[in-house]
Image (cartoon, rainbow, N blue to C red; front, top):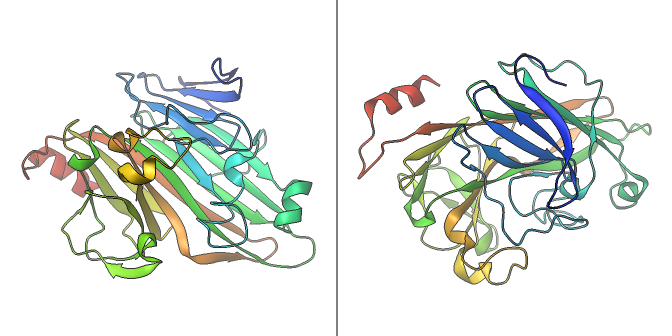
Length: 316
């Protein structure tokens, strides 16, 4: 499951009783992945700072999805279909994949492989056979990489369609001081306006109220700038054309049972997705989608970037 000087161990979480895998990189970065939901819950840098948001009111038991971390949304995104919100993958028990097929070469030796297959209960609500393989990898520099491979294993010769998203809950200092760059001038679907198609007018996405948007045909890299923490998340994606952006703000937060009333201030959900046009797989075909996140210290202040940071971002 892993190699090199890094480590992977399977343990039972003391607080929740759920089984999880802990990846530790030699320089001190770590990731915790719960088998429930196949979900990355904790991602810490070498200073033991938590980079992902997890609600203090999150449920850690079936059938509720865990509020925070990186949710795997499959085979449905949002409520665009007959299934429950965001599909069922995020509240199923995954297994460790002991014999994964070869994955594309990466710079990481620290990784785990999980697999999810349909259950008899799943077939009653979504009558398709599939293999969903997920690799979670931690690079030597602490970058977090998720690669999903979904295969149609239907024996009846029927294709199936699905939506997908990595709903990634970032931990931020103050949502009103956060901006997302790379989405300017794009079309987006505004779910707060009944799916109205709009165009992003600003030079960056900023937050002053509730946001629930799907940006279409987004570039392969966007950045999330946290002014107060002087931290920039760089999100890169492959095989996933869209980007979802969500923050409930104060009024909506009060209606969410597994979310604290004031927690909207310290989180932002952004993730690579295939939300607008479902993916179609014929039997035997396989789809792959990847999201990679890295963190760079940002000296962005009052509109001024450190030239070294600009150089690093442009070189990616």
